[in-house]
Length: 233
Image (tube, rainbow, N blue to C red; front, side, top):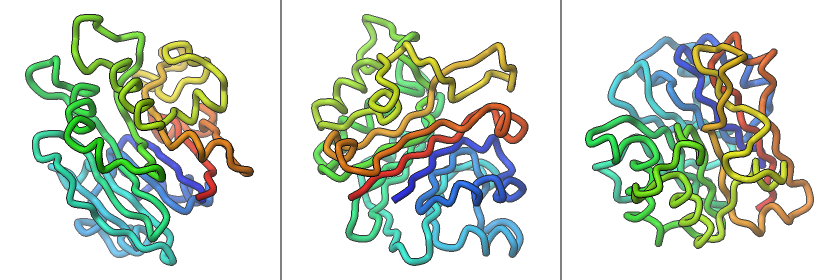
């Protein structure tokens, strides 16, 4: 099963060929437009999908191959944005993430994910996958803040969920050598703020692979690079 997560930086309907080339089974796309609000070509491409968002031009979508059932899950989360939980066939639960700003600032971005995890951690089973744009990295931890990046990683570790990038590249949180985001699309402003987490047992299965899109290919389309994970359930 190939899962791809990508913040498309808007205008997904004009960038679908790039994603098609990745041959994904599941796409989790942040900052994409609502297929139901746009033309036939984009709606046909979206096909089997779920979408949430406050603006029709910028939301969070999950797109699945037609042979995979895609069922929305009713998890606690009205106070947090943006999170999209779904059941993928009889395989696994998938949580799409695109953290947002809010007030107070201590509850923004990674604080949103922290709150969502506290409300829903019991729902995350051994086949759970969490992926998306966290807008976060350990380098921005505030030691006295509850729910910083390190707290989220530790909470996920308690659930035996591990970052696939860090597993594959054998690097520590906050010491990533491969960026997933370039501020203002400038090559000299790299950061690592996008993640896929899955159960530790899945990375031990044959066929596990993980990659980050190359900036020379993707930077013209978005300030974020896609994450590509191959997992066997």
